[in-house]
Image 1 (cartoon, rainbow, N blue to C red):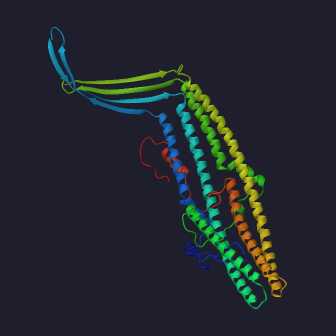
Image 2 (tube, rainbow, N blue to C red; image 1 turned 90 degrees about the vertical axis):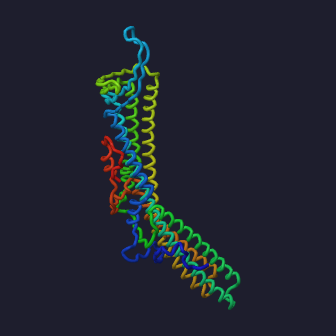
Length: 465
């Protein structure tokens, strides 16, 4: 099996491995950093952009609710032909006449009181917008965490692939030496077979590592939007991780967008109760009509008709559906409150889980570093003892495999150390470009909202993206 990189990895210019640490070489000032990858994902991730578009669509619900405060105006016009024939009276006798009557008019309707329905609908729409903003913030956090995870996966899988390729080279040399010793009678055919088997297994591991790296590259491309090239080392977000678990839990319960979104959903449900109750209130409205009537066949036939009519409607009984709707809305409020408590429990559990994973990763890094150092010493010792006949070829192969496993474990621990810090910050609701100071043009959800909330007319989309 050739150690030449496949086409999928030729564009991935990453450096070598030093003491089994997850450090990649950086060439020039154009290297991609973890922060720049997060900035790319923030600006170009399709899922995040789709969530922004969804929020802009939700903004329009406020303008639709406020339409209840405004009048409705409609214009009418008609013209037709009317033919009269027959007896009109004793003096007039028989006769017939064709008329062409027409009319043009304007009608204005204005609701004066609708049981506070419009007020409640507006409040519900505003709460829905606020909840959608928190949902967008949660999508941003998930996107940034996914980008950080993909970034570190590419680094870790690249380093693991290099380790396995180096291991193949070492085992090829080990096999060559074992065959030479077999030719002079120092070892048996069993030792050669053991070396050959270990080399075949190492080549299989290279294939697995290449497949894992391909997957990581594809995921990186999906989330960040570009192929990974010249990746710089990833650094943990320790400066944004709270000092204690209790502090992290308090911050998460106070700031996490999923909790805030659930609380806004409670506000929406409470407003819907008021909307349903408005069906029991009187309805007061006023309408005005102005019309011009004329006839084309009769000269100087023009009439102006105008009217202003106030109307009060008092509901007495409408079949009971409105009472059922009120009861239903109240039950939905209770459901929303229970759901908010459930989300709180979810967030708290996620914080505790992420905190424990980060602490475990820190301990694993220290232990893996000590394991690598000990295995390096052990391998050197076993090789020296094998040269004087005190160790077998299998002992050397086992010691080498243990060192490889320790180095791979160290790479995984270092990757988990960085990803774990991002996961803690994400679990408490702070993994946003604004909070962790990623240099990127911030998307303003309020800009589009301010542009459309009070619009009376227009079908053009404001430039608030």
